[in-house]
Image 1 (cartoon, rainbow, N blue to C red):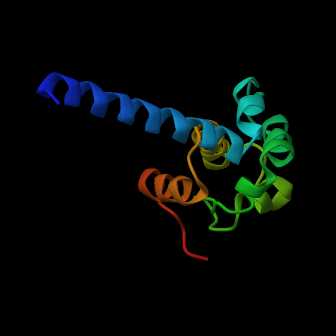
Image 2: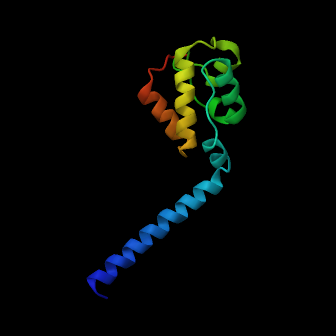
Image 3: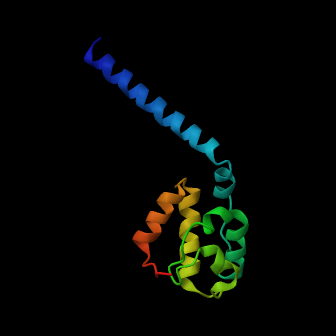
Length: 119
């Protein structure tokens, strides 16, 4: 097999692998297509309610940067709707989750971007 043929065979395998991974990922969480079609509401209660409704498992698994509780607790009344860190972090985790990031990746990104308070 010529060098050129090997190159194209390898390139084809890589493209097929990437495509298969994308298709698997889309099947892994069917909400992604729906979430990508949504627009985030304004900050405050509308945003808190939206995140609790659309990605409850995510906000229940990510710590808040202002109080150290899970974001779901903040969105259920622990923090005021005017809390900038809760709003900013919620927008970020929605974007990251909609991009297909796992909960582990989202938690890592939260730790990198925000200074988390200890409980």
